[in-house]
Every structure is written in C-alpha cells, then in structure tokens.
Image (cartoon, rainbow, N blue to C red; front, side):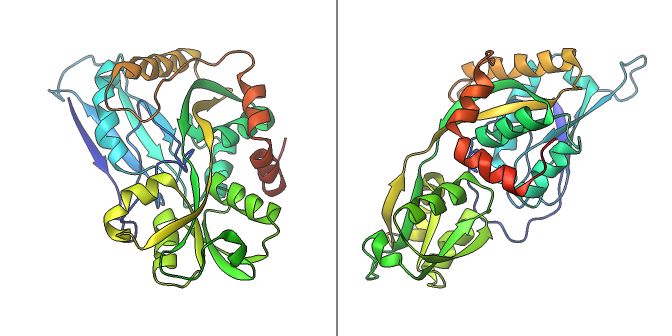
Length: 307
C-alpha cells in the first residue's frame, strides 16, 4: 500500500494532547483516520494508490471527507494508517481529512455538513446527535483526568491561593476548560481566565509565570515530562471518564456507515490503538451520553445553534 499525506507546515505546535480528549482526547481514536496536527487550520489529503495507475476499468474513486477534532495529533496518522488494509475497497477511496482552528468552528462545520463522518468527544457528539440529527457509528471509552497546575517552587500550594489570580485554559469549548472552570467556581474561587487553545501553551504560560496556574489534561503532563522537569505541581485532579464517538450526518450512505463500523471494530485487535475497545451503539447510547455530559452540553447550547 502507498499513500501520500499533504499538509501545511505547522510552525507553532510542538506538543499535542490526545484528550481534547474527546481530549482527549479523546479521546479520541480513530479507526480509518489520518489526522491533522493539533492546530488543525488546513486540510490534509490521503490517497490510496494502486500499484499501476494505468490499470483499466477501475471502480470510480469516491471522496470521503473525515472530520478530526483540533486536538488530534499528527502521530495518529502513522498508527491508524495500518488499518487501511482492513478497509474493503480502500483502493477506490480518496480520504480528505479536515478539521478547524478551534472547537466552535469544528462544530459549526459539522453542522454545515462539511464532513461525511467525524470523530467527536461524547459531549460534542451528544449535542450533534440530539440537536442536529447526527447518528452514532461507533463508540469507545477513554479516560483523561484534568489537572490544575502551578509552579512547584511558588507559594501556591492549594487552589484557595488562586483567588483573584490569573489562570490559563485551553479551548473554551473543551471539556478541560468547562470542567476546570466549573470546579473552581464551585470552590468559590474568583479568577481571571485566559484561553490559549492548546494545552502545551497553557503549560508554557505557567512555566514562564505569565499565569499563576493552568488547567490541562493528564496526557500533556506525561508528554511534556522532559520539558517540565519537575517544575510543576498538581494542585487538584479532576477525574474525567468519558467516550469518543465516530458519528455521521443522517444522510450518510448506509453501506459506507457499515464499512466504517467494520474497520473500527476490527481495530480492537490491534496493539496500535487509543480507545481500548470500539463498540456499536445501543438504543440507549445517546441518552446515556447526554445525561453523563449534561454540564458540557448545556454550555454548548449557550454558544451554538439548536435546530
């Protein structure tokens, strides 16, 4: 198998987070996907090429537009490319992979039918299914705990000392930001918030002391451990257990939906995976996700359109 991936150079992002999860990742995860780097401002194209481009009577090439969340990192491409061989008829499919510069634009593009299928964290998927007639193709669990961090050698030893301080957050519509802000408000903390979009930028803002604290997912702390080098402490850990979902607009070709489901289910036997186990949805899936992610969905409803 040969395939080419074309993307614009990313001059900013050095590190990526899986959860934003959905984080993220999460997250999320990603069966047939060859995904974008986390800034996700451009479109990446993947073509499965036949050994001989001059072969006659080939089946028509079908373009498939796949949405990947802004937080999905580019190394997903190397792992999930291994699963394309399991995708029946992959030689006749041209995958066009898209994302957006932030969560809000990603959701709006989804609503405008910019993608044939898309990966989404549970709360985003539940919002799109309930209010914009999307359908769940597959779902899989992931866990990505959220940390409130500060400098190790600062006098900030607990979250109460963050009162009237400045705190860095990632994308305002991410579960990390929403849950983080909600928790701090519940504790009676008054704070100034600054959104950076990416988790590594939040970490940098704490390290360079432009922010007194930051809210990030566990994965980024693990990924940046050599850079952090023991200079950060976790003031509080918020348990976050959710799901990643592959969803599609209601007009998706049923045959294509079944092929995508097949690949995701087959990937369960692979060692190169992010979601522990993909499964087919059941009739109660959407209501379960809606109840579990109610706080996040209510936040989306305030920021986005509802049919």
